[in-house]
Length: 256
Ligand SMILES: Nc1nc2c(c(=O)[nH]1)N[C@H]1C(S)=C(S)[C@@H](COP(=O)(O)O)O[C@H]1N2
Ligand SMILES: [Mo]
Picture 1 (cartoon, rainbow, N blue to C red):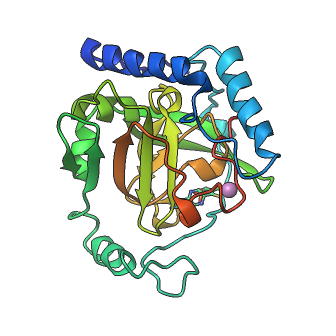
Picture 2 (cartoon, rainbow, N blue to C red; picture 1 turned 120 degrees about the horizontal axis):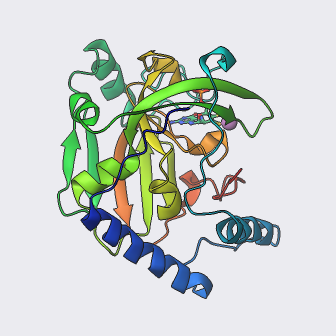
């Protein structure tokens, strides 16, 4: 595959590296991704540390050719604007429905937290950032996998545009179905971590997360949050309580 990795502006890179240094130094502190609640979580922690130790920081996952693209089921929420969906949000479901009916022209991705320039990005703003297209395998924790082509803005490009501050350590993602999740800066700045607005050469379909979803190619499918509403850059790890994956029995770190 042709490589279209972007080069981060030096300032963002220095900021990012400073934070990564913080992450490594804080290796044994209480603020690390949690191993708590249950003995089995020690295994998550081990996977996290082992992968961080063994894998080169920006090792790319395998990319495929057009001929390898398969069909892909839509999983979990497939329309956050449909009140019959199990995860329909009373706070955001109707808003999503209105946005969708207006072809997402009014949709804005809020970018908040530890950034010098908090903002609200329209789809056109995301498309104005450098674009990356990649054909990758999506692996769902339920045991199926699919190959699709994704086009979007590298999250690193957005974070650099927003001026991520050196204290940043995690990026939190909030969706219209109230899914919340986070990744650390290793994955946030990974070249294949993108905010995808295109799938298989077309606009991202609603069922797959329109108008924009996260693609974290280095982790299992559930980390690729669909229907993005808000991104927040933070220093302190948040397990999101009852809404987070830890209390719902999922690993926070699902590296593959
Ligand atoms: N907002 C949101 N994101 C989500 C989900 C969801 O239900 N809501 N499901 C996750 C799971 S378990 C998987 S496997 C993938 C499925 O992506 P797809 O529907 O495009 O196949 O999205 C992930 N992201
Ligand atoms: Mo999944």
